[in-house]
Image (tube, rainbow, N blue to C red; front, side, top):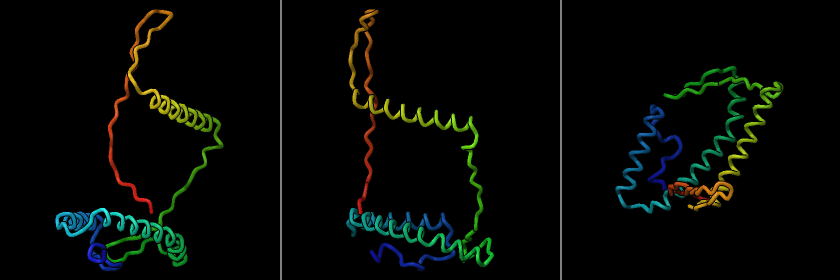
Length: 155
């Protein structure tokens, strides 16, 4: 993995996000084209790194924010990167009766939608039904399906 993943601090610091993404794409292409690596194992190991880095960043975020606030800094420039302390206001709309009603309706409709989807999955076949009252012949539909494949890594 040391030939695939660069060590912390070894990415050129002048690179911007698009440059880093392009570098990653180029590296991925060379990994695939070389045929030297077991791609399944490489993918799993990279997911391990991703999990580690996301967790590490998550644990460092608040102490970093506290340090920046303590120093009174709004923007921190580091080579070609800028770290900005952002401020946002979170508004609590729940004090408004109309908003609360709308939220409740949305939750109810979301639940009904999920129940309907479950019903349709369980009864997903074409059937001919005769309406006893009218004698009308109705045909139920089969839901269109698209099978998608993905990768899921459990660490």
